[in-house]
Image (cartoon, rainbow, N blue to C red; front, top):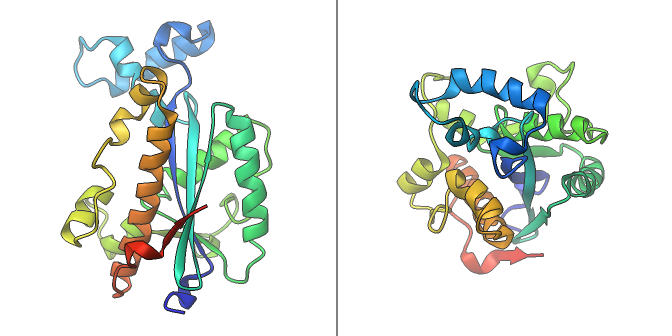
Length: 234
């Protein structure tokens, strides 16, 4: 079993979108709060608030999760499973149930790229908003950094250097890993969801991200990439 040492790692990636297709649909209280936030994150002083709202998906207070993809090593294969849909509460409940089972494995860990700053806290916040109990493996509240079960491939690449953000796309390029951004990238997810109504394209993109994270993890551990024929979609 080539990947026996990594069998207790669950690789994951999430795709998020604004909660509504346009700013005008926000209820009054949230609308005013977004206007305040927009003043801080807009790129220019005259940027239209609707354009700024396109960035709402990256904030858990104004966005929602439409897809979670997970991957794990099983014997000599890498298995990828997607949780997706328009009902975020149902999606998160199914994912939480899977985590409750996975965390029973001795030494179980979660791995994502920039997961400590985005994926893991975003999942926790949206679970709370939707009234879902956060599985222990995902909940970092009250834990010391060394007590969490998180692996972050961006942290692995930093080697203690926190000056720069290094994208997954850049790291896959320098390590010769197939790019997950060949069709769409993260900035296009909201448009694909609300305008193109193409959730399946988002799911496909998310699966590619999870595979890329796992391949990157192997390279950062000094291992060869897994062959494409060893990837199984379930």
